[in-house]
Image 1 (cartoon, one colour):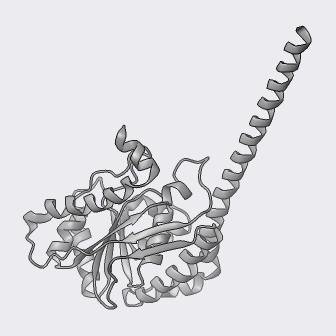
Image 2 (image 1 turned 45 degrees about the horizontal axis):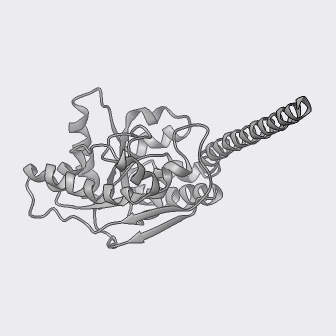
Image 3 (image 1 turned 90 degrees about the vertical axis):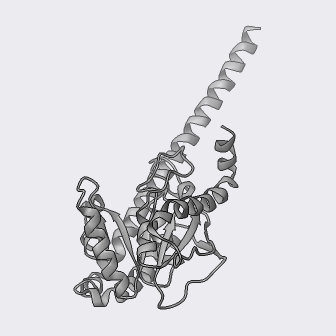
Length: 274
């Protein structure tokens, strides 16, 4: 009897050691995956620094910067991370036309994926804090419209800069959740800014659903894995007949489209039941 107990204890011990080793190797893989991502973010910037620098010297050369960012930065990152984009479109962007691009925000991969979704040059509206990131921040603060959430006058500056960019024939991209929500939140409440701006400038809102960015590269350090990055471009919302007081209705209609798509994911169904 004692021999049998000892045998079972040894088996449990071996199983525990095996499970520990598996967790250890998995965590090492996650760490290496993260390091590889940050190398890929920085490497193209160093390799093409002269071209990138020349393209940000003037707003007139922004389309050239956008082409470099889309093809020599975003594409290599996604493909060498093992995350090739797969894009479904219900409607296509017209060349030379300005739009308001909006999507759910869960990961740093959202930036690269958005660059692959749209061939039309656009400008990100994003938080000022990102400008502090070494190397990346140098270009970020020169080509993006930065929002300082602690400064009430910042919104006026954002609208003025966005208007100038739209007059130059560019589009605007805003993640309307206003930041990355906590991971248990499927889709956070949307803020008014993107929809108010779209109505004011009479440009169509282009809703997009990014399905896999959280799964592939979330803000939880020991997580992520290679795989397809699916995105869906939904039918556009025209704003020509809308007034500023319609921004709330437009905001909720756009959010409902994206939320419905996310709810079809396995984790979305679980959260919905909870």
